[in-house]
Image (tube, rainbow, N blue to C red; front, side):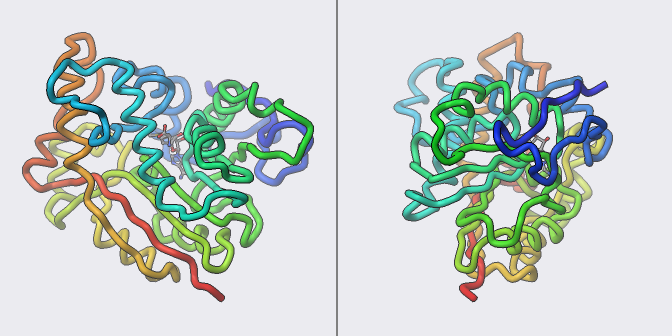
Amino acid sequence: MPQQPPPAGGPGRPDRPGHPDGAARPDLPERVAATYGAEDLGTVPAFAGGFINFGYWAWLPEPADRPLTEDDRIRSEQDLYRLVLDTCDRPRGRTALEVGCGRGLGCALALKEFDFRSVIGLDAHPDQIARALEANAALLSEGAGPRRLEFVLGPAQRMPLPDGCADFVYSVEAAQHFRDLPGFAREAVRVLRPGGLFALTTFFARVPDAVRVLPELLPPYADGLDVPHLVDDVAAAFGAAGLRDVAVTPIGDGVWECYDRYMEQRPELRDKWPRQYLTAYQTGLLDYYLITASAPAD
Ligand SMILES: C[S@@+](CC[C@H](N)C(=O)[O-])C[C@H]1O[C@@H](n2cnc3c(N)ncnc32)[C@H](O)[C@@H]1O
């Protein structure tokens, strides 16, 4: 059973829409709910430091010359966030919203390194919201000034947030779980202020045939954790929702090889999380993408 989370949203705003009301259940498919509930994927050692993503390794100093460490693994996960947050020009004084924030460590990084005025972390799993509140307790209780960090329970396709509340909407390795990507895209447009910016990174199917083949290769697709969305369909859904200038950049060359090398170097990790992502990447079935766009200006 998922543990009972404390009220989301931090101190001072107990009436925030989307709060668990004491009987909250994850608004998620069963496998996704179990993965982020009792199984707590963030504690699987393949993902280090409380982040849950494959990481962006291209900025690590000379990683090819030496064994990769756990610190490298954490840095790779932070660097994936930095890649996404860097797409927001002039973050200072702006409000950012992360969709699928997990333990909220990327929200804290956005706040500390990018100088947003405020960051909202949204996640559909009440256990993840509870973990985010705990992991960021010090930051949440800092100072008496305007609230800068908050966590909200709710699904990407039905965000309990007001229209136009964010200058920048971003998401890191969460959209592979979303069943309703067009619904998420419409919600992103709704919660963005006119002209606001959007950035998302995760892995998607590269070619139509991959939608059939990936579940045969990778258990997370077969067991219903991930959805093999075709990247062209994803980009089309964002365009159809009204996002402008949708740009899709493959970044897999900075993700899969080092991630796989990190796993290979650690016998204790080898059977802890599937390894066939590199094969899927090398055979052209999937890639890791950075997708950016902007909301209409009026
Ligand atoms: C792989 S984790 C990534 C967490 C974090 N972004 C990171 O990189 O460390 C995916 C997160 O997305 C959340 N999630 C899955 N489906 C969701 C949905 N439909 N709406 C909002 N969050 C969702 C999960 O609860 C989980 O916390």
